[in-house]
Amino acid sequence: MIARRRRLLGIALAVAALAALVAGAAAGRRGGPVDVRGAHVERLTIDSAAVGRKLRVRIVYPAGVAAGDGSERPLLVFLHGRGTSIDGYLGGPFFAALSRLGDRAPVVAFPSGGDHSYWHDRRDGAWGRYVIKEVIPRVQAHTGVDSARTALGGISMGGFGAFDLARLHRKAFCAVGGHSPALWTSADQTAPGAFDDAADFDRHDVIRAARRFAGQRVWIDAGDADPFQPGDRAFVAALRARGQHPSVHTAWSGGHDGDYWDAHWRDYLRFYGRALADCGS
Image (cartoon, rainbow, N blue to C red; front, side, top):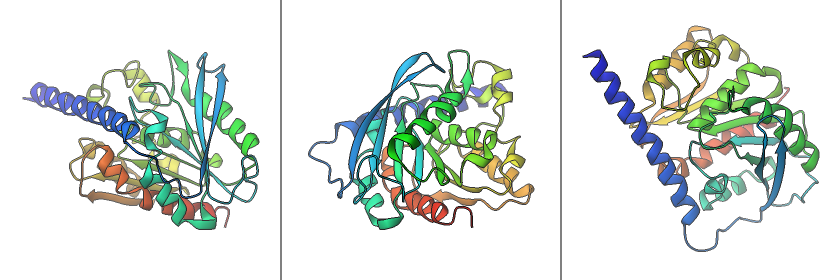
């Protein structure tokens, strides 16, 4: 019975990963021009020593901010999901939500993280070091943002990566958000390719490391039909057991797909805008 349940869970997670891939690809194929609401997108390439390849970064400057002149604005680094293009999120819902923030809108960086890196140091590359030591310093210097105000977030695989990096580098971020984060309670439940092996999972078990989020502003959301709900609920319980008060939205209607995320960009960016505005206070 236990083995059968695990097989069913594995199938559900594989279906969820495929849905995320399809949703991301569909987002990149949406016809017609996108209303960027006065924002503009800049392309950057990082020749990464950490992972041994050249990787793209998309930088979004909100309306009223010239390229390289973001000294009055904070930075949001946003990590993409498995199999999803960084351009897949740059659609109308994102730009509309960014525009609504007005002067609170951060500069947003979307780095490439490979197909299934899960944003952590592993055998095929030091993906965590790439974000912390290469992406963030390069983007901060290139854009001229207020480097004392940085937040980290992500969707699915990126949500896991955001939590993993935030617990390892607590002082680097004013806030962290996981949107439909890919969280598991044990190594034998994980999707193929998410970790090198059980030892790799143990080194990056954010649920077990919940105490590391003390004092951080933490957001987590997931649709009520999301297959990662068990891991997400376990993470929330672990945070609360340690006296923390995350912003939790795990009862919203929806699944693990682009329609769900597009419906909540306004919620996501409003959280980051408020947290970054209060950073250090």
